[in-house]
Length: 395
Image 1 (spheres, rainbow, N blue to C red):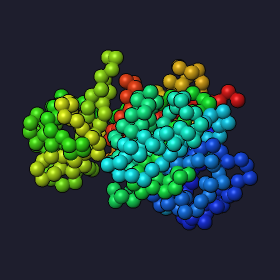
Image 2: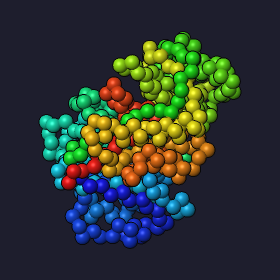
Image 3: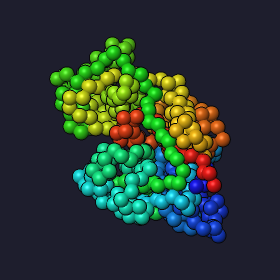
Image 4: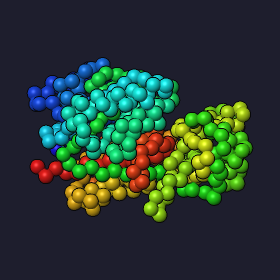
């Protein structure tokens, strides 16, 4: 397998023809990418990828993209693409427009279609790279798991836009989707490693979810969830939050659910988005009654340093497990974290680059993150960071 990273910035759609041109070479097997919403829309309208690759999936990212060679921030449209040529591997893409009510069934159907396209029916993929639109993540994962269980790691990121104005989009070789999902089942010819984590610390404040409805957290310990959350904020010397949109005010103080496995403890985060009038809280991920939920704390240094660590761990696993070096990586960094830290996106990329020296990587700033911890259970969370690293080919 060979990979090529493309970092692209442009002002007009016509420039894409000059950037990519009409390739005289055989199309590559797969392109995975991110771009700001404007960049993805122009890419889709241009049609240039049809001669570049047999299949592709490009998700919109918040404001810009993540790449070891960051695009020009002065130009309005940005793309970061990772191109795979893998004669010994197999890949299959599926994409569906859907809503919450039918996402589960559509994901099941899509998985069968993607497996058929990969021509590997009866075999288990090495990885599923998934990009849903906001609100569908848990149902899409559940649909895939209904057929494969947790035997296959599901990684990826939720499509995003610049202002949470539902301008996100997905563009694949199956077409453009405004609401739905796309994913690729991957049977690469090289080893793959991955890591999924958050950059937050647990506090001493926690309680039991006693009432919830999907993404609405209603009660903690039989009290209005928002009142309990504000009590925890006050105990930590923070200002309580009034009803209304609280997304930016809660980024450094999300809620977390602990996952214990083999003596280690990981935390899956939920980002509070709205404090409702009745002091229930609307989150960016589902929560379940009887789960223990903890008040989390984070800061700029924790988030940036954790991104470095996640990339470093994923890379080191390739060497320790497979004894190969990395050749490329896909990185997911939560858009909420990116907007909250007082660092430029270029600085975030530089930090990750130190953990992946001489390794091209691309990624996006997403409105949700999919991955799995060492307990091998696939989950959707918020304010998370992930890295999928592809090993070098022996060719």
